[in-house]
Every structure is written in C-alpha cells, then in structure tokens.
Amino acid sequence: MAAFMAGLRRMRAQSGLTFRELARRAEAEGRSLPASTLAAALGREKLPRAEVVEGLVRACGCPPDTVAAWLAARSRLACPGPETTASTVSATAPDQGIPADSATAVRRRRAGLRRRTGPYIAAAGVATAVALGLILHAQTGSAADGTGGTDGTGPGRVAALGGTTAPPTRSASVPEGKYLIRTAHSGLCLSERVGEGSGQVHQDECADAIPDYALERFPDGTYQILSQHPEFGPGCMGVTDRRTADLAPVADDFCGRRGPAERFVLERVDGDAVTGAAKAGLGASADSDVYRLRPRHSQKCLGFTPSATSGGRKGQPLLQLSCDPKAEGQLFTFAPVT
Image (cartoon, rainbow, N blue to C red; front, top):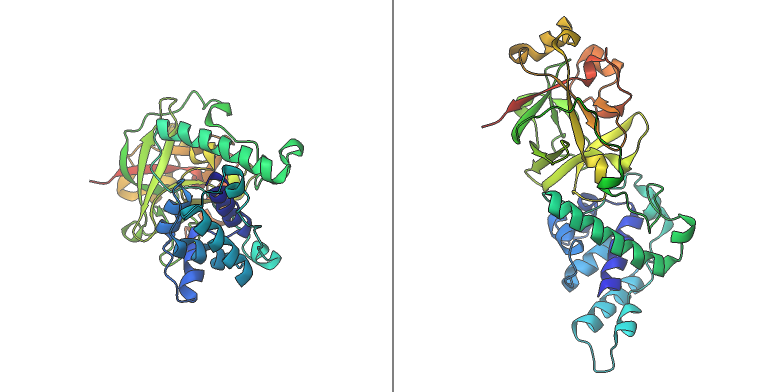
C-alpha cells in the first residue's frame, strides 16, 4: 500500500500540475475530480477509489495502458489473493509513464496536503516526509547523489522546521485570528485573483479580497498565514518551491512540503520609518501598527517591486525581496476581521 501511494504522489509531483490544474483537466474530459478530494486522497494511506486513481492518472497525461496498469494494481490491493505478499504488492505500482511534454507544460510546482497545521501536525508531517523520502530512495536510488528533488534537497532530504535560522529578535507578537492584510503603500489588501487557480497572491481592493486569511502563532514566535478559499478550501501562504532568491512568487497552496517557507516573522516597524506616503495609503488605518513579513527560510521580506508601488495598481504580485528599510512596498498592517 505504501509503495502504491508513494507512486501516486510521485506521479503527481512529476507532472508539475497542481491539484487545481488536475481537477480542471479531469473536468475537461467530463470527469469529476475535485481538487479537495484529490488532495485528501493523496494525503493519507487509505486506498483511493478507483475513479480517483483513474482520474489522476489520466489527468497527468498518461497513456491508456498506464491507466489500466494502475487500476489493475489498485484492484490487487483491494482484493488480494492468498498468494499476495507485501513484496508482490509493492511491485504492483506501475512505472509513472508521464509524457515529457506533460511534465514540462506547467512550470509551477505546488505540493502537499492543504490543511491547518499546528506544531504537532507539522512534526508529524516531517516524519511522514522522511518516510516518503526513504520510499523514493528505494525506488530511484538517487538520494545518495542528492538528485531528484524539486528544490535541490533531493528525494531523501527534508527541510525540517527545526533546521532553519532562528527568527530575528525583533519578532513582534500579534494575536491569532482572522485579518485583512493591507499593503501600506497602496491601502489595498493581499488577495488571490477571482477565477484564477495559480494561488499567486496579489494586491486588490479589500472589499473583494479572497481568500480569508488568519494568523496562527507558533511557540518560537513565527506565524503561519492560513487561507480559507471559497472554492479550494483551507491552505497556507508560502514562498513557491522554498526559493531563497529575490522575486520568488508568493502563493496560497496546500500546507505542507514548503516547510519553513510557510512560516513568517512579523517584524514591527518603528513609526518614524513609515513615511507620509505610506500613511496616506493606509488611510483610516494610518495609526495601526506596521510590520514587515519575513519568510523564516530566507530571512528576506515580502513586498512589491518599486515599479508596482509607484502606481499602487491592483493585481500586482506579492514577491520575496531583499529587505529595504526605505521600501514602502514591504510594509503591511493587519486589520482584524470579526
């Protein structure tokens, strides 16, 4: 069972497709494969329904014979004969059979199970990821040379939360709860675009902002920014693929494998550092506390490029940038939502 589920997860990751994109592909073929259903199925060790397996394999672009092989493997697991052993069941996970054009058609990779992750769940997730890494090592034999990971960690290596740099000493304490996250330079709010499945976070009118955001604080003073999307359900904000370079996009996705790239330090900014222009953008919130959002894994800042802040336009993407004390595009306020 473990090898079968690991094979399904690996196939999904190799396709380069998000849960949302897989759901849309299945829908285009007249099949129902909700993103939430697929995420839940791949996030546990229970054998998925045959239609979920078939829908996933087809949506990943596999040919009919590969689809048939996966369904046959599932059938053997669901109704094992007396001669079935653990070793023979493990061998039933077929080759991935993903066409090269499917694997490269979508450049963005987003993975993991979208869920609310408290400290105890996060620890369990790390243990699960380690176990999965060992399974993939047995299948590929590549962990020793560090190849095969989507972010350079390799399939047998996991970026554990405890192995990152400690947060800055200026980490502020903000109560947990629901918030509108407002950008100081424009007065707009962090939001996804309606009807878009990428998860990319932009700035938009606060009245139109989706998903709902909430802060969850961890004992070390860092925060997770939880998202509740009206269509795609719960998730987390994070830096795509755990990148550490400038201009890395920030997106909402299923919580999990981005690890510390989904954890943030809220660094309070002295009032004197907030310029008149930024206060004007905040409008009625000008007297609110102002913060920088710093991803734990990179210690950089979230914000908007100078070209975006000069116009304060809607739809500008939120990015990871080198921290600049003079950058108004890196300042945010948190307006509680009741």
